[in-house]
Length: 258
Length: 296
Image (cartoon, rainbow over all chains, first blue to last red; front, top):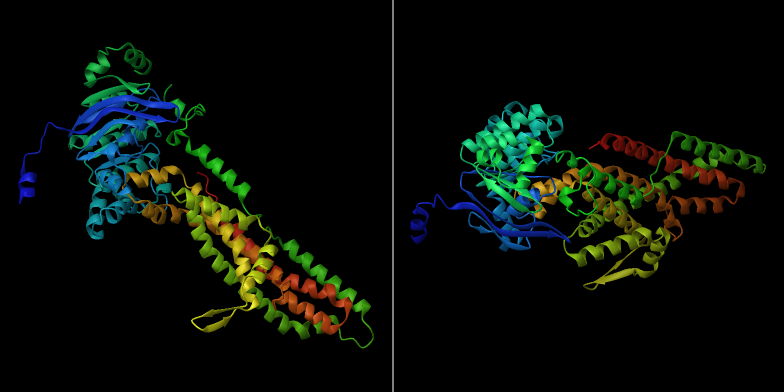
């Protein structure tokens, strides 16, 4: 009974679902993250921008435990990510946090539909029929209902990336991480992927995006973080950050790009 | 500016595996694989013609040296053919069993080579390289002389015939080569596949069985078949340790005939049968290699 009352308690709406505090990460001698702190409220979309090599991708990989951190703390939902040791613990976390990659990374030996169905069936141990229905619906949602039996090699980059997004969504995660998902796409197909992410954001999915699409970041983000040299230089609501950057480094970066 | 740096080579200062361009990594592992690979059997039709010519020359030599009243060379070979072909079937049986044993053991050893536990990985590496680089004949002799000729289990004495020892001895280098084929194939799969599987909360075991291995089968098949063709031809080594396979029987037939002139004809006859068996395998291997050579 106590567990019932606990779960019946109103969820702390304002409490952030992802909290990073003073995260440090080194690869050998190279310190990639030098004390990053940020908090993402549930349902928010945040965009991380900054020059290549500033640690953006590493930051995302720390959040789902792909990369262990050296110092600081990461909290995602009920998980203290920096304390997860065993594979089992990391797997429990990754059921809640899904990631989409720049190079799509679909499984080439499986069809689009199978790509979407695999993890729910084998990881979440859900029934095949139920998963299939959900996978078909998800592929429909990303506009690929007609392509469900195609192999990744037969799909365009934009289509593959949308399958990858559907594959992540099929896990029904709490948080979605996007690692420069449009960087490998041509300008026309970028749009179809961004539309998919936009819909997702409007539905209230918590999203953390590493992106070079400044216009998109401005439109979609609740908060934008500008990183350089392993630290967050400046953050704020998109209009403020893009129109009135305070820090010189931010101004220099934005003037190069916009 | 920042976008283009994804396609240009990164400064060597980075050791972030996620930042290394996959293409460069693939090319590197492919080159390493080629360097480490077993030599490839490239049987051509011309090799068959050469075997045939050798046989015909052998027949001519035998006929020239024949004494009056000797039966013709072809008739002599025909007479021995049933026995010799039984020997050849024995060669094929040895090759099939050694391949089966070596493949199963080699798969296990190959997986041990990619284990996350350093002692397992290093031990498997050592075993692989020991058996891969030791001469096949030496391994064969080891097995002949180090294995007992019989074992007693629960009071029942089971004899171990020579051919089983020879088969076991031949399976050792097969094991080591299969181990390398497995390791090479697994490592040729881009690390991004492991990464995306991990992100979808697959366990390591699930990742290996469902995602990595199915992609490896195609890459492993051609070198595996090549290895089988090489093994088949190596089964004649068993004649040195006294197994009654085709080579041994040929030698016995020759000594029974007591006609030195028959030597070339008889041995090139053996060669021809091996060519007949191995050539289709080699051609098929080449076809599969071409089919699966997918540019990434």
